[in-house]
Picture 1: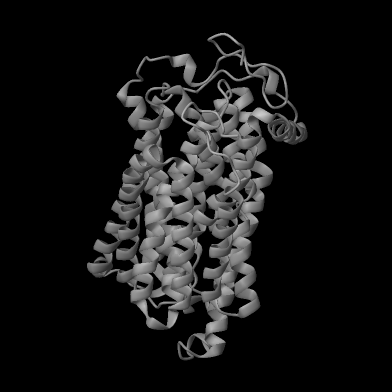
Picture 2: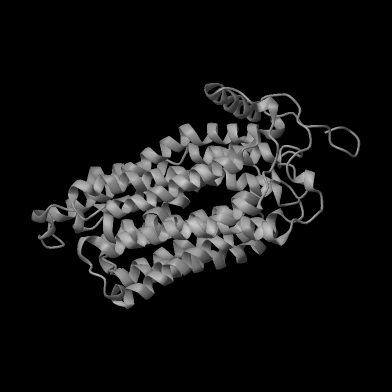
Length: 471
């Protein structure tokens, strides 16, 4: 900062000053509502993949069930050690696929995002990621309930996670083209809300179809679940169209960031090193590290929550879907309410309280496994109640420690570091299940990651009211 009233141009982490870009270009001019709602609909379009396929229905009630065990294991009693170990092998296999997906995201997403940013081709890469995600969901039609096809299901779902992340990088970038500094929070929240709402509506439709006995369709060959996957794909096709028709590219690109594929990794490393070396941005660096870990734990709560409910607590189909609706509803409401506490208490305190409560709830769920479903109804919903507030406060915290003029760069690194750590919870889940042969120990893997993120956050200095980190 200069000694005057106006900030000097900020240098990027890899040196070289940048002009005013991003949100500042629009000023206070509001974007047309058509563009805003078209952008928000993309979250609505892709949410069924996360809520219906990845979390509550396809993986939990189909892919990790006895349908994919050998007949010898599937016909054993539910409590037989051999069958329990067989189910654990399926759940750990799902975790292994997620771990590989996380590593693929680490290697690909930062570079593809940087190249799309530099060329001003976010919409193109949004289309590639969304289209590939839709193809993965369509491919699940071929995953019939036989052990030989289990890994096809894992591969398609894991690839869907990768393509979803690649698409979301560019969807988030396109927010800049429709938001101003005064509207970015409201518009971002609208997209978040549309995502929760889309998940709830999709799950309610699944309940309706189930209660109608699938309208007479045969349940042989996992047909209802395969049709659900096709339905999620068609949902994504229909509701993702508006963003491509109505939302403009966020920028024309940045020539100074156009480098070769492998040079993009060098550029990324320079950005991160620059944050650490500069005393004014070191707080931002350490928060990026801490948030990468605890955000991975937060994601694992929804990724494996339904698998735990189904394989460990024996939730029935209808119980699990109702739990999914309740979980999405509670997460959405608690996030809206926590926004007021964020302004009153500060984001760091809210994140710490949320992570601490989640660690306690997760440990209690593990300790009370033998008490039955009630333990998970209570503990699981408590976990969901704190996921959204922690995620929301994380974004708020970063905004308060981001130097003026570097918002786009810092939030880009926020996304990148999150992807860099996206294998940790998956790996902890997989390793503990493999070592113990029991899926319930995966709960402790999630708790360990949340606790690690909490401990990393404790020494990070919070911004004062003026926006500067406390010293």
